[in-house]
Image (cartoon, rainbow over the protein chains, first blue to last red):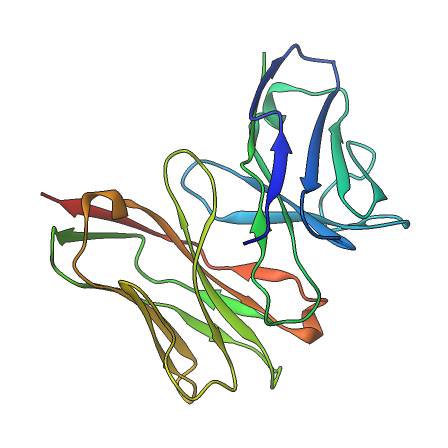
Length: 116
Length: 115
């Protein structure tokens, strides 16, 4: 199956700094990627839809200035958590899909962010 | 609006027994896809099985099968011959054309396999 690589898998940063998370589709072109946030023992919460070459579409309640998304190429989307605070600590996971509703989502390995 | 419901927050099953994880959904789409994912404690999302809304046969993948009842809008996952490595969170998800092809996830079921 298709492979999506997410990096880093774990990051610890100081409060007030910014963290960039990369999501790459390794063997297919992904015009759309999705970014999720997951709290412990909860489901995946869609944060935003990342569209190649255009602005990301954010879900209601997600601060676009806080969570910057860049989808500069058909294989790479990045999520930058700006001025991170302890409440931003969470598990962030990206996915990419091929077009058509009959294709599963391919997920990255996830990034566990801890802000201290 | 799309909605996925998993009513079992936690399930226990004896090793080598079969277990059914429930999933119901609501959608106005005529064509849609239903998916099950496994998430072990490492956090990765592992695709298990897919069922298309127009598929007449229930999907099967090894020990996984999907009990698809379209009229009841249910897509239950059946795991046969449970193994200790099956202990994980399981998420039901749906994707359809009227949702921008986004995936909608249920709240998940935590499965524990008892030796």
